[in-house]
Image (cartoon, rainbow, N blue to C red; front, top):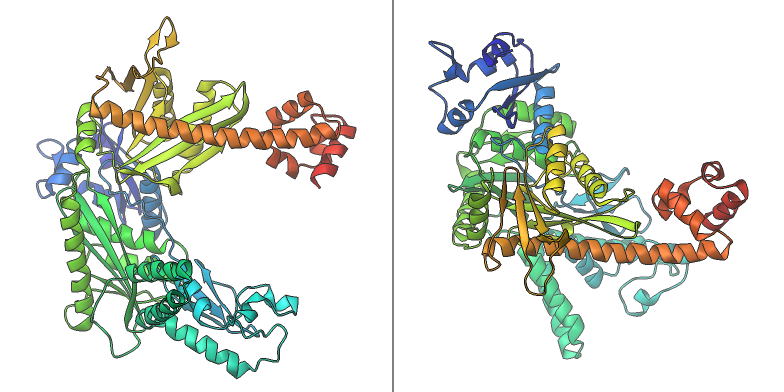
Length: 600
């Protein structure tokens, strides 16, 4: 069926539509209340099918590449909104803007129904009757909480009250000791009130910490003083400075977006009780232009996700965007109460928006002056990548004669290794090809939770490159891939010291760059980090396997039987979960009983 025939047969139902190019690569995913009307609005039909002349240059460029169209019908426009957002995160279409910030921000909370309440941290709503929340905090939540317990004589640890004995915290005057002493509720309440005031007022908190820091310095307790100094710095860093102070105790979540030619920045500010308590920002790479309407919609959907936040505040944005009513309706369902999106025109709320926009401008200026995108641009141009490789995932596997087989993924983003995003995998496959297939499949299966990067780099040659492209294609994801392999001489990889002859493979080309080439060195550096990560995880896994094997050997389970079990069940962790009957499927009943006795 031709593109024109598909368009003519589109239903007048709600749904999502997907545009593909001549190579069947996904270009764009959109939502519609009426699929027929929405898709037809992109085209002029006479004298032949072409892009509508009223479209923006970005969308015109996209429509000129469209060769096929798929669509999915859903019940409501709201369902289309949810499906669109989910598919964009999983499939990363070329012309949609991908938001990778899936962080949830922590809150500090106190449960007043407890006999002697204490403050803790949560990222979700706590199921209890009398909970008070403070936040969210972009950074510094743990520092604020630690500071509260440094300055207030509260029950320091959750299990302290059960002991019925005074502990060290009482001895060093950091707890009133209600576990063993008859502490009056009003006395304990004074400490809660002090803690609450410190959480609400960072200026007061930092002043109290500074006083305590000076005391520690005078007592020559320099390590403790340095710790408080660093804590003050982190707490201060968590918010945008402002003289705006609302007379009333108003709460607002503020979102603004500004863009340069290549990047956009999202700034979020959280006001609670008339004061700014924290802020955060994220940069977004604009590979195929900028769509402010799509970005505002996706920013709000992704920030609140599908979980009701502990504190629901009116939302302030810098400008009206398309489908704002639909986003309000969606958030109302998430919040289980009416969501409000406000575009302030004057007054204090407008001052908050102006403050956020000012900070967005400053962030873009700093970003523009960074020289760190030069090598990324050179990599993109050399390999003809569809996107600037701002976020790269690099893969390697490791094993020893088929034992302790593992895979590793390291992440390179914002010109540094993002170690928090590293992932390691226990693998069952025995040969290199099957191991990489297992590793990459595991990663693709997690795209719904952790969106695809701009580029994959594999430690391997053309065969593994082809494998990666097939896995991506079968899952509907178009992603650039580079494989890096050692030059082979007499069918053996050449590893002469200082003369690493590496070859770079992309889908339709092979590159043999000079050893001094910065682009080769950049790729080698990323590959080496993945190799290091895989080796380290392999060593840890092998050590654990050896320890577990020795334990089983001592109880009469031979090494051959252990290998048989691991080949079938994968890891000792899985083995520990099994029933006697499940183990008996591989070994005899006597051995199964021995193993179950060890791991019960």
